[in-house]
Length: 375
Image (cartoon, rainbow, N blue to C red):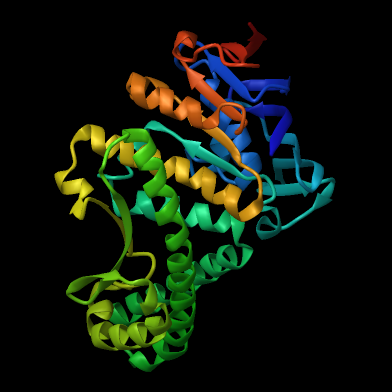
């Protein structure tokens, strides 16, 4: 997969820009707050229909503007394509249009058409950061290659919100818990389906991440990735063979904790609470790994995300590296560049262009105050 051009109108600090992109490695360099990350955000937004920086999309409009557009022209195994996303105000309400090859599509039809992986300094916290980071990493990896999984997540989140609303009403106003029953049944069905797909993907991720970690460290340490499922008063390291028992598990768990959920006004178990556990030679990488080992683990996970998409779809996704090179030491930086060189179209933001060696076909763009010059 390769982006051939990127354009943006009234996006962040860009009134209008269009870049022709023929190179595999594209480096955006310049001082802070000049607009480097904004270009990566435009690509991310084109790929996913959302920002990696804010949930309030109106913040992406250039100050004073009431409409914006971003888009990319790209090539994949299925041919040449164009995706364009517009955001504009109409009759005092914000509207959004997603166009794929000129036709208006829904978000779930758009998701997965242009595949991308973002690697930012926050991702170096994948090992020791909050579970939400690892869930988001895992969900985005699977959803890009599995439209059914993406649809399951959307439905699950809607059911979860409705169940939580009813729990709050029961807590605050009383009533019969029987009103939860239809939502419980749908919750169980969707939660079990999500866990089954996560476990199937985990088997593939485990093999890829372990191999990449070994190549990065050139040592005898073995990285393992396990699925950590939250249960009432305990945590289960879920074996692959247990996927078929997921519905029975949630039936039992929801029944046991219904009173607690009502008292708290939210759903205390489910895929939205689960986690990935990383083990190094059988020990928790988070608890016992050195900082270097943890960073190697995070790098292995992000590179495994690239390889996973390649294995599932037959081509590498676009890679977005946002200010991550300065956070890696020379060895890990070299390993990352070795992995992507000539295989993965990559967009990199850095303050110092010297951090990126002159690989074959690099393109360098100097960014200053929303102005772009190739240099």
